[in-house]
Image (cartoon, rainbow, N blue to C red; front, side):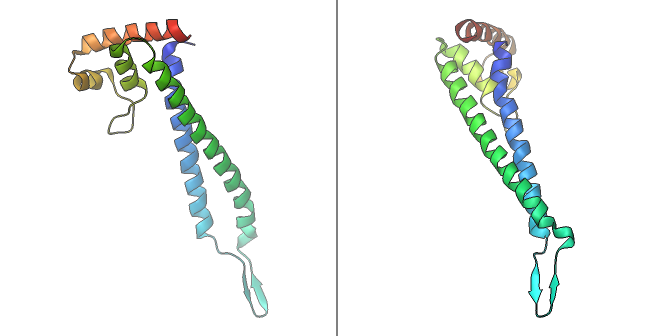
Length: 142
């Protein structure tokens, strides 16, 4: 595994967490739209094929997986942020943190161009530092 692949694991964990969260939210919305069993004097009305009994176990399982994904995402961030901070050079740490941990306004990771603007450096210099930072990270941790 390369340093880039290892650091990109944060983004994979984030996407998995967001996907599970969206699925759980959709399932919750579906459950809220169902009518429960109503007991009126002599007749009992049941929602079609008792869909609620089908969906609740799926929601519970999905919520458990979502919780695990949240934990995995935050654990990945903590470990990698610590490793990035200990790489030995502040400029390498800054570039790697901005590239693999921080996100832009759109929620996606920053491009090298955006990092160049934020750090007041040229794109070429940021690209050069990024390559060296990855090599240093790989040498130290992988």
